[in-house]
Length: 194
Image 1 (cartoon, rainbow, N blue to C red):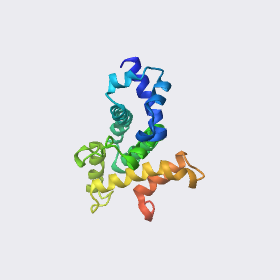
Image 2 (cartoon, rainbow, N blue to C red):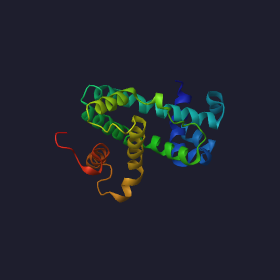
Image 3 (cartoon, one colour):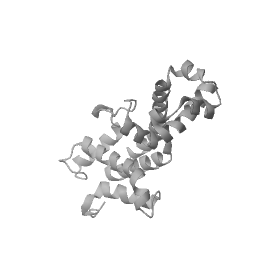
Image 4 (spheres, rainbow, N blue to C red):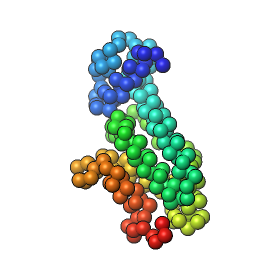
């Protein structure tokens, strides 16, 4: 990646995370990047092209960081594997506040750059763990994987947004573990033997 392209992606990620696509000014991005404004148009075609590239880079970084976690989770029994996958996702997302802010801006004022995955694009390792857990009576047989996945991802993302004002343990592994436990054990609490 050329120096100016990388500098623009980094600066733009910060600016877009703070003010969203529509609130970000090109001048603020180039000032932060220390490059000429023409470089945005050279590398990305437009501010919107830069935004799409930032979203793509941030998502790719999340996927790359989560891949080894999912590989490890796939080797565990279904319950422990799901716990490892969810806690790993929480920790990775927490370490990427720009991505979370970008996701929120995109959800509220979206340009369409952050498309949601289709059912066949969801992580295979988690689907396999869940289906194996259903077959072994670890997870409910009446809840499709897509519903369980969407619920878990929604909770883990929302936790990053809503927990800090309400939880004294915001950002701690204890809070993460409570939420993952709630996802896996529901309102009934842990089932003996898990």
